[in-house]
Length: 398
Image 1 (cartoon, rainbow, N blue to C red):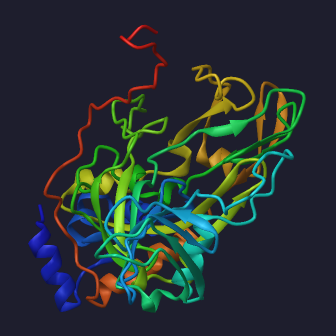
Image 2 (image 1 turned 180 degrees about the horizontal axis):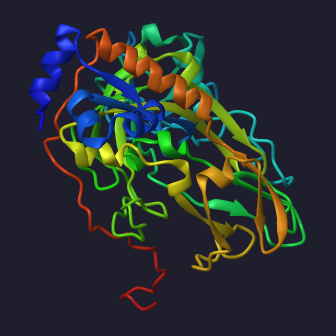
């Protein structure tokens, strides 16, 4: 048994043994679980991919004369101004003003909140336009300026839902192509798409949230952030395999970190034809090896992680429950799978190579003593379900 304090002491002294989730599998095979658990202090996990439920709080400071901003646009992308005078929240999926969206289907969705966030992190200039009704103490009614992230007092990434523990595999069983947040799906099951780093992914290496909880330290696109809550749609009461690994969405994380400390490579605005805009984000989470049970969870392999294949032409939009098949991430990463006797091409929206790079970067920071671990001050529930939205009349009649 180890403690967080003992592991952090070894990190400070430069003696901590740190492996990535990719490396630890073979290491445990060679050494055995108990011997490896005694030696290893930290396993680094990571993921990189689109995370739509992301955004940031920005503070512009006060102009002269002062202004109570009630409507705000950044590069023509609307930000929510219903907070304090010069605070806004910019969402990753917000479209640019007058974007035709899917008026001419499928729309291109060339620019949105995720792209503005990418520009800010990259240090690029962004146009700020604001309107107000004016008050005695905030008389200015219109403002136009150009800003960079260095002009902001705070730029705090605050993401309600990141790092899905597992996720759907999307397929199209209809006879026409469809466009989704998991990319274009060709008709008649010609291709499928998925989005997970599999055996590298944080919550798949901690299936019962033994070390990841509220207050856990995270590497958020290069910044040292933390988990501030369970993510929205957190649903731990799910179907699991014998190894405890969920075979559906399950847990999510609410993450926050300082955008001024982030690395542009891991903050990228993305566009999905026929669907919308989003933000691709890199996240790394260290797992302290407190005992052999925690290490065993970190040896999960792609061949042992299964995800449901869902028909996005009918079942998904209708909130149905039918599953076409269940496939392992080893099968998904092979490039081609067989479903109902049909050969289906596979493609990932999550970058395994970037996730591996993040796990290596986090490993290096820990070994150098630059990244410390935090013990969660509140664990996640392991039996929480998720409520659907049932459309009702007034009085609760469905």
